[in-house]
Image 1 (cartoon, rainbow, N blue to C red):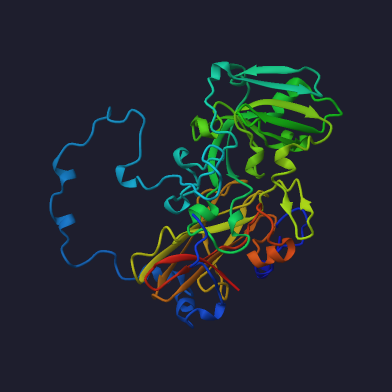
Image 2: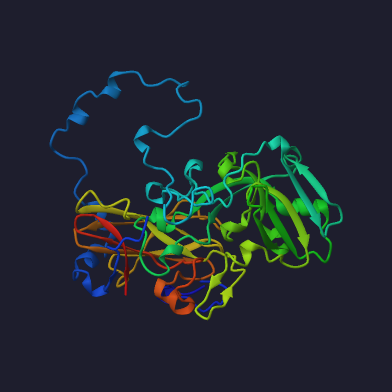
Length: 446
């Protein structure tokens, strides 16, 4: 494990690991532009937040002193919404897409509203979607899963068959390899929903894949599996057998209920800690082979183009990463000076998060954040940093370290080692500029 002082060192040496239209107002900022002393002093003592001015006002507020409509009339009954829905006042907390990012919405992506969420579990209705051929609508009674290839006994499972195997419950994050991909060449997308929202974190219920492979009997020559989806794109990915036998699941529920159609109903593959493209949805076929298949989504796509023109391939693991979700461009500081809570998410495909540091001044001074809630393997971690804001301009960043000692690198460190031609595996440190009026924007520091 690296020492605490090593948090300032960026890990860019590992060859197989990284360790809306463009907004013209986005720009690079020099560290020297930050007003001297103000924001730095604000963050030196997080405990001062407890001594900040009280939230309540001495002026009588009619919203508390007078009877409101919701006090006066009966609310809706239990039959108002047989399937529970969010409050109408939360109607803005939805997935969104970026019109210019893909040619259409059938083969497209939308983004989880990270800025509006808390804790570590993503509600099912706002988990981001990635489609290669639209969301298939499949009758579970008509769905089948086949295992064949280098096995002793080819098998075909119905959903009822799968339900008879021992099942487990595991919380994992799923991150698209292209998450933050539009930021490789500079700040573009103004909101953490768009820069980091290709991720969600849910509890999956399913059958360990190794149990199904054991049922079929993998031959000694079997070293890889090919997973195929039942959607119109015929999505396929090669996965090493050792990973399949380790922690992969064939999942049919998320957060206690059946998978949503857009998340692969009735059954999907779960490949913990590895890029989301490998988590094949609408899973229909698993073929065991002796080498990778070199399919479209692992050759022409989901490789990392380097300055030399060569591309890294099979960079499956999602490296240590974090982002401040609030304040952020879609969640500006609206309360003015005083007690302020910074919060965000950190994760790593290598395991748990051991530490998150937060800076208020673009990296001059770092402060240990408080990780709250469960710390689970290959799962999102929620962090907080409380301080007393004096109204000075802020340059907010977070930097995570995982249990293996890997430290989240800067964007410039990544560009130095990998260039600017990539789309995937950008886990660089994100910067938000908070102005004196609380307005927040996506910038970079140099």
